[in-house]
Image (tube, rainbow, N blue to C red; front, side, top):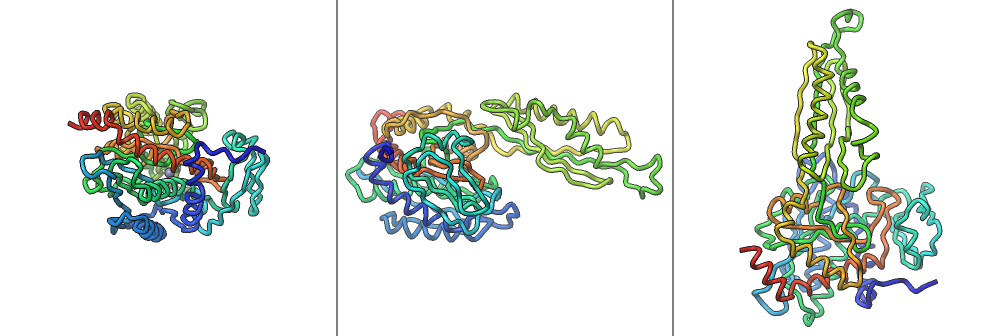
Length: 433
Ligand SMILES: [Zn+2]
């Protein structure tokens, strides 16, 4: 059995701190809720926020605050006083609604032997044959839930990595660093993490979400996203008197869904840079029926084509029945961050340099989804995404490697150093002017 493979001596030093924090954070239920009446949508996120503020203050970040909307912000000033760049570090407090999030009981499987990991509840198994990312982690310490809840590595691995890096930097003033601003956001999983994020108050020139997955991942491309709502109005008549009169909206809606391509343009038949039309919800009655669908692509032009196909399909089917009526609503959700990051190439280059400084080869993959950074970049804060080490997000099989989480923390420490390099600071100053 090889010794647990740390990416660097620094990662090894940070490992016990990052694990201790992670185990603390995942025990707090921060599952967000789609039935949002206030921000944050659930009180558990405030509880984690309060804990983080206390821990940030303990580490010496005296200005740490939790605002009324559940956003945590704090500053680690530069070692050499003003004049340095101001860089943001962002992770989200909440967990997904896709799997149970309360009562997480984390288990640390020390020195993984490469076999199937069987969890104590509900027969949940982590089989390396079905999880290509798990197989190479032999020798790693793997953290899982107990089989009946998610783990919360998405994104408490990112929160723990940032907290560990900040504590390390704060206690080592000799390590070079810019001014670091930390921001922990609520309600990211319901697409609202950036909504009340005060970019002005944050005051960073760029930021990094630590919300990626596999070791070395660096992402500057997300989907562009549209949500479409199709409402069909039929003519509802008592079925006993319906002859020649009833127009069943539910049947028309079902025909629209059935007419969409299912051998392409679906999430399950596409990968990499291909987009899709994904009906997520169908409800209704004979009188009125509604389809909700999400439409995704990396390319704005192709995205418009997918939306046009969806509209055409609905119009053709409903248009063939003159007594039925169609309503279409198209709502922009977020935009591919790439167009906002391309003009400031040093932002991604700095992350790439930091990952390499940690001894890791960067992996550049597009995010088939969105991050807080998609909307923050659009709002004026360029924010690519960096790995945090977790896998099988949004499921009861979610797991994270302690060594990879420690590597994420070490990468943040490296990133701080990279942002003191004179050529980068000068380039950024020029880019900003
Ligand atoms: Zn996440």
